[in-house]
Length: 393
Image (cartoon, rainbow, N blue to C red):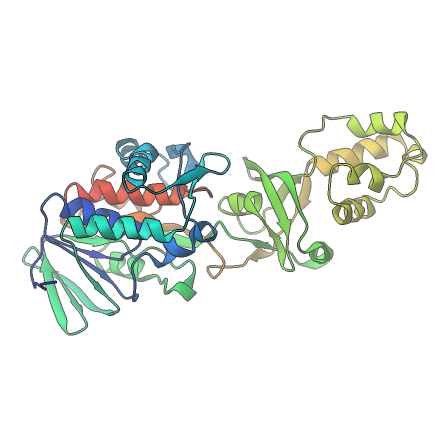
C-alpha cells in the first residue's frame, strides 16, 4: 500500500472503536491512517467472549452504562444501534446466536469480526501501520503531527482510540489519558471494571469453595444483577460479581441473595412442615452441596430445624437473602475486562466525540468515561462512538 505523509485523519488504536471509525471515515472518501503499536489489529476482540466475541447486546440503552454524565452516550447509541452492527455482521455472512440476556456471539470465531473490520477498512482505503510505537504527538498550525517508527504523519484531525489500561498483558496502557492531559483534557480517575473481587479476613474461608457457582442476585449500592456468581481461590467472580464490581467502591459491602426465588418466611414454613430436617439439607435442594454446607455452618443453626426458634430461623433466611461480603479489593487491571473512568465526557461533544476546546481532537471507545455492562455493551459503545466520529473526521 502506498504510504503518505498527509491524511485527513489519523486514528491511534486499532481496536474495535478505532477500526470502526477508520472504515466509516474511509468509506466517506477520507484519507485515513490507522496506527497501533501491536503487531495485529483487534487483539482484544480476538480474546473476547471466550474467543467467540460477544459483539453487541440487543438491550443496549444509555442506562446500561456508567459515566459521570449518564446522558452522554445517548446520542451515539441512538444513531448507531445494535441492529445496525448486526446488519453488518449478517452482510458478511457471519453466523451468530443469542446466548442470554440479549448477548450476541459469533457461532464460529472472533476472528470473523476482525476479518469483517479489516475488509471494511480495505473498502475504505484505510492505511494501517502496525508494530511501531508512537514516538511523539504534537499540534501546530491546525495540523496534528504523529511520529512513529521512522515516519511522521500529519492530519487536521486526530482520534484517540487506544482504550484503557485493562488487560496490560495484551499491550494495554494509559496512553490515551497521558495524551488527553497533554492537550488539556480532564480525565476521570480510571479504575478496573468488570473485575473479580478479592476477600480477606474471616471471609477467606469462602475461598475453599473455589470453582463453586450459583445463580444469585448480587448488589452494590442500589444496583443489582441476577446472574451466576463464582467462588475463586482469591474471592468472588462470575457474571453477577463482574457486573456489580463496576459499581462497587472500596470499604462498601457487596450483598448477595443466594435464594432469589424464595419469599420471606419460607424457611420458617419449612421448619414447621419438616422439623427434623437440617438447614444444610434444605439449602442443598437449592444450592451446590459445598456452598449449602458452608452457609449453614456460618449461620450457626445446627441439627434439626425444629430445635431452633422461629426467630432464629427467620433471621437465617434474611441473611441468606442479603449476605454481606466485604471485599478488600479487586484483581486489578490485569483481570479487568474494561476500565471505568477515562477522558471526561464534559470535554467532548456527544454528537461527534470531538474535544470542545481542542478542534480536530476526538476520543472514542474505552478511552472515554463511558463503561458498559458485561455482555456486549462495551463493544456497542465502541461501534457507536467510532461511527459518530467517523461521520465527521
